[in-house]
Length: 390
Image 1 (tube, rainbow, N blue to C red):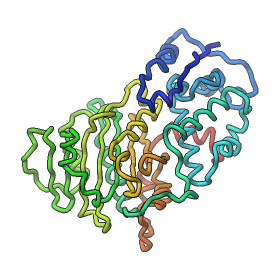
Image 2: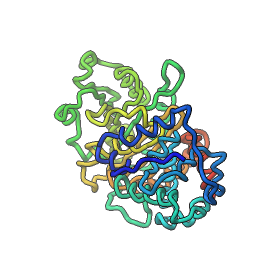
Image 3: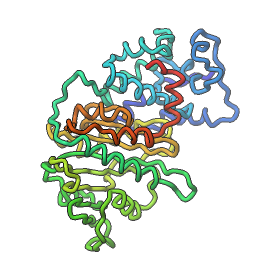
Image 4: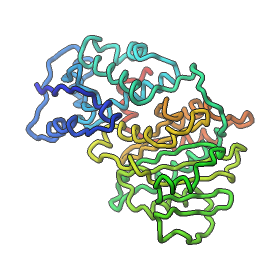
C-alpha cells in the first residue's frame, strides 16, 4: 500500500501564506508519473460504496491520513476533486444555507462515508480550512454590509461580452486553449482616485484605458510604441481586449486584471475600463493550475483594489479561470465571501449586491444560459456521479 507523508502545514495554508508549494507535491508527482507504481486498497465498505474500481482518482481518498490534505490528493490524481467539493458546498450554502455538517449529512455520497474514517475527516478538514483561510460562502440569509450601486443588467451584459471574447481569443498556435486568468473588478466611478495617474504611481505601466463614452483608448508608459498613438474609435470591449493581448503576447499561464468603473446611472456609455497585468501574482504555476484552483483564487484575493477599497464602496469581482478544457468562474464581494458561479444562478447570486431593474424580466439572459453556459465537463460529470441529489 502506498502511504502519503505527513505534513506540518496544509496545502491551503501554504498557498494562502505565499509559501513554496513544491514540498507538498514533489512526492505526489513522482508517484503519479512513475510507470512502475501501483495502488492497492483493502476491500472496505467504503471502497465498495464509492466504486473505486472504476474511479481511480478516489483510491487516494482511501489511502490518505487525517493530516493529508485533499488538494495534494487532487494534484496526485490529476482531477480537481478538492475544489469541486468546495464548489458544490458553497453553492448549496447560497441556495439552502447549509452548514458543513448539514451538507455532509444531506449528501448521499458523503453520508455513506463513516465519519471516523480517513476520507470523511480529510474532506471535512478541507472544507473547514477553505472557509477559514480562503473565502466564506455567500449566504443570502446574512445581510451584507454593502450598498447596492451597480446595475445587475450592466454586469450581465459585460459578463456575456467578456466571456464571448475569452472563449474565442485564447487559442494557441497548436489549436489548444492557453490557460490564463482574468480578474474582473466592478466598482463605481465615484472612486475617482483610481485612474491612470494612480496606476503609474504604483508602478503599473502596461495598461490600456478605454473610455466607453468617447470610444478612445489611452496606453500606459509600458507600451512605449503605442503611447501617444491615435487609434480609430473602439466600440466594443472585445476589440479592446484583442488589442491588449496583441501587445502582451501569449497569454499562457498569465493573470490579467480588468477594472470596470461603472457609471451609477446604469448607462454603459459612461463607463471607464482599465486592463493591465499586475506587478505581483501575475503568473500561474503550470504544474498545478489544471488540478487546483487555489493559486488562481489566492491571486485574486491578493489584488490591491479589492483589499484597500472600503467594503461600503461595493467592489464586486468575477474571476475567469480559463483552462485548456474548462471555464471556471468565481464571484466575490470584495475579499470576504466568494463562491463559484454559473450563468444559470448568476442573477440569484448578484441580486443581493446589485440594483435589479423591476421592469426587466431578463429573458435575454435565459437564452444566454441555454446557449453559452460556462463549460466544465469534468465538474459536470463529477456532480452527476457523486452529488446528483444536491
